[in-house]
Every structure is written in structure tokens, then in C-alpha cells.
Length: 335
Ligand SMILES: NC(=O)c1ccc[n+]([C@@H]2O[C@H](COP(=O)([O-])OP(=O)(O)OC[C@H]3O[C@@H](n4cnc5c(N)ncnc54)[C@H](OP(=O)(O)O)[C@@H]3O)[C@@H](O)[C@H]2O)c1
Image (cartoon, rainbow, N blue to C red; front, side, top):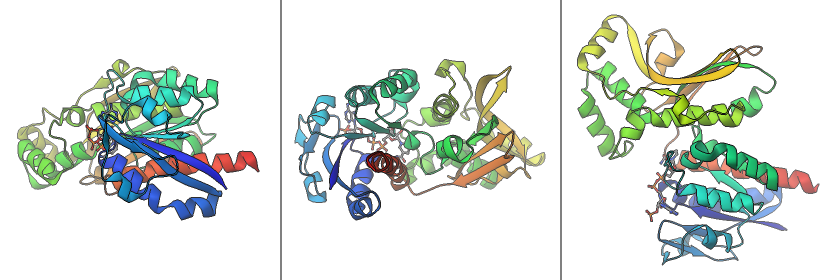
């Protein structure tokens, strides 16, 4: 039976969940794709472990100091990288080095972190085309919400007229708590941090950058745009006051942080900011940590999806969905 060897870069919440889920699905991979999937290496920033015959759950409890970096993962013999390190969209590091190394070697990459894709998406796509490697990014574009699947597959053949995305769980939770319960911004944020879903430094989410990165990736990867992060007008929710909340309430409006893509003379434009939606708007019904995307098309009308899985498992599952696509295409290419 053909083997598929997987390496994971970034072994925190998502990376560990990917490993657990992958090891629990080996029978499924054999049954559906005839592939013996082995996890051959994992690493964090300073330590890792590898075994060309395959790691088991027990092996992942202790990592060897010094075993990290792109060369370490490449030398494990992995033919698929699952990258789940930190996101830095201004430099692309540290994911960029891992992704480039794998794609350059003609090996496939499933990417969860947004940084490298935002910073060097065009270069990475070009590299993948050149070497025949596959680059998949579901985990970076909304994870359990199948945003990129909709654009790449389900709406195939349509012209996309507009996208509206509520794509960040933290900001949706904060605005929802303020408008529904009258909770103040600092109290809602403190609650989200104690509950573990808002970051200790929440600026990337709260200032709208996470939403901007996801919208940019959808535009560049699914709609073949060529936008840079600085092409996007980004406003967050950090300046929302109780007086603004009162005003929205009185006018029966619901504030949402919306990433909006539209076309101007055939050029895609994106902005991220608070939009005051009518209470009757479907997107106004997106509560708590849920996310949603509404896509307007020329021939299939308006498609809206809502969702929220439990993290980090939901994001890990999105990465494994991408792995399954790779397994399926390998099966198809040998049959
Ligand atoms: N958590 C979620 O629900 C979620 C959802 C969607 C997308 N994401 C994205 O997924 C990525 C991972 O999130 P997470 O929650 O798993 O973060 P995390 O728990 O902070 O884990 C990050 C991991 O990256 C490792 N790392 C840092 N620098 C590295 C390097 N140079 N080489 C290899 N590994 C390195 C860290 O290693 P050390 O432990 O050694 O520092 C750690 O293991 C982020 O980009 C995040 O934006 C997360």
C-alpha cells in the first residue's frame, strides 16, 4: 500500500489537535484512499521529534530540544507538510520558510497560519505551480466554515459579485455581548480571555487584521486577485463605546465587524469595519462566537453559511479535510 508521510510544523493547540485527529483517522484514510498515512515528524519553535516509520500518540509527549526547522522536517521524508505555527502577516515568518522548503521540493503543503500566505501568497502559488505541488489553505480562511470550498468548488462557474464575511469569533462575541447584555468592552474582553478564546494580546483580532487577512486570502487564492494587505481599509471594534451601543440599540440595528469584498470596474476591493445591520438581516443573527459568510453571485443568487466548531479541533479538522483532498487526488492520479 502507498504511504503518505505527514509532518507538522507548529505543535501548539492546532498542531497537537491535527496530530490526534490524524492518528485517529488512519483506518479511514486506508479505507477511502488506499493510503497508509504516517505522521513522521512534528516540531515547535525549539524542539520536535521524528520517526520515518511513523509516530504514535505516546511518542508526542516528549520532544527533543534542537529538533526544529524546515530542514529537520524535510529530512524526515515527509511528503506533506501541515503548517500550524504563529501568524505574522508583516514578515510571513516562521511559516514561510517551512512552506517554501516543502513546495520547492515538490512536496504538498496544507497551511493553517495566515502570515506566509498573506505576505507571499503569489510567490507560494507560483512555486507550487512550478513544482507540481499542492497548496491548500482551508484552515487559514475560516477553518470549519467552508469559505474557500464554496468559492473554489460549490459556486464554480458563477461570477462572484460581492462577499460579506463575519469571520472573527472574538470580535463577534464582543459585539454580541455588548449589544445583547450591555456588557462593557473591557468586561466582555476580560471574559473572553478568561474563557480562553481571546488572545492575551487581542489587537490582531480586535483591530480587524484577522478578518482582513482572511478576506485577502479568499480574494487572492479563490478569486485570483492580487491584493496586498495595505490595499485593504481596516477598522476594528476597539473604539466602540457604550453610547454607540445605545444608539444602535435604539435604531434597531446590530453592529457587526464585516469584511466586505466588491468590484469596482472589474477590480476587487476589500474593506473591514463595523457595519450597522438591520435586525432582519440574516448576518445580524450571527451570535456569540459564530462566524458567517454571504456570497452574492450572478447565477446562483445569494449563498449564506453560518458555523462555529469547537477549537482547536475544528481548525485541525479543516486541515485534515485538505489532506484528504490531497489523498484523493493522488488516488485519482494513479488509477
Ligand atoms: N487556535 C485556533 O482556534 C485557530 C483557528 C484558526 C487558525 N489558527 C491559526 O493556527 C495557528 C496555530 O494556532 P495555535 O492556537 O495552535 O497557536 P499556539 O498554540 O500558540 O501554537 C503555535 C505553535 O507554533 C510553534 N512555533 C513558533 N515558532 C515556530 C517555529 N519557528 N518553528 C516551528 N514551530 C514554531 C510554537 O512552538 P513553541 O511552543 O515552541 O513556541 C507552538 O507550538 C496560528 O497561526 C493561528 O492563527 C488557530
